[in-house]
Amino acid sequence: MSDNFLPTWLYNDENIFEFELDKYSKNYWHPLIFVGEIKPGEILERKFFNQSLFISCLENNSIAVFKNRCPHRGSKLCLPKTKLNPSKSIFCPYHGWTFDGYGKLKTLPLKDDFEIKIELGDYFLEEVNSLVNGPLIWINLSKKPISIDDQIELVAKKCTYEWQKNYSIFSEFSNTLNCNWKIAHDNTLDDYHVAVAHKDTLHKEQGPIKNYKYFFSEFCNVLVTPLSSEDNLYTFGLVPWTHLIIWPGKGILLISYLPENINHCTLEIKLASGSLSTKDLEIWKRSILKFLEEDKVIVESVHKSYMEKFKIGPPNKLEKRIIHWQKIYKKFLHASGISF
Ligand code: FES
Ligand SMILES: [Fe+2]
Image (cartoon, rainbow, N blue to C red; front, side, top):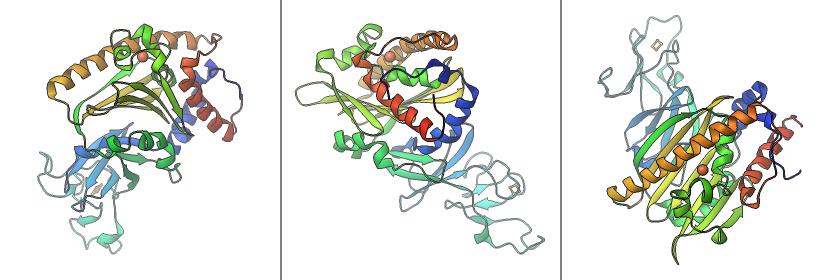
């Protein structure tokens, strides 16, 4: 495989886009929430793409994730203890079936008036593959994802202590970017632009280029930059479209670029704090928002060029994390019979 960038037509092709959602995305685990966002006995609703999901934390601290869809006739359900449903169970507002935190049918009106005999244990909410790794709850929407340990190998290795800590969410937001998701992902793996495009923001945190250190595993890469004689800042690039910036003693920034269509993606950000004061977190958040604004202008202009199928130039050494990820992506396409 050559070390050139991906051809631009891959950013502009409906079939490739479908393939990315149906196959590429499903091969990997996706971070859904931080463990610190949910308490034992609690059930939360979150969206993943257009899918509404329930995350249930059982009293023994184990986690289960369900699709928000009633197994009777497919209605959307209501969370327990909300305005629509003050009960302690997940409630279906269509015919009134209720479900417990294990997703099991608990009660239903007129139980004996069905064509067949209804046993409560026969009906469950549809469960989604989920697991806890480090401070995050991850999900996967297929039967055969790669192992999470392989997917994020370098994170657990390089940040063993930070990865085991508890974090609380400080801030989260999302924003639509007018570009193909791969342009945004490439850009966040691009260490060549930081000193120029983010000279007053991210560059100040990552420091001089001469101190950059790189590590690569099969599915993961990291740029390590020194913060002091003891601490480093870790900027991880993960499949399928995720980034983790771990700042020891401060917190974690999680960035994902969820594909909407070939021309748009949703930038999702979660900023979680380890032990930083609210004032310092505000400062960190402002600096993050600023560099993301700087990136938005860049990626949207690059997208326009890619849509015109122009011939892309050569990669710089500081763009090697892009090349590393693109090789993983290319290998997956080739293994699925898409060659170019
Ligand atoms: S669709 Fe939920 S109870 Fe009928
Ligand atoms: Fe950037």
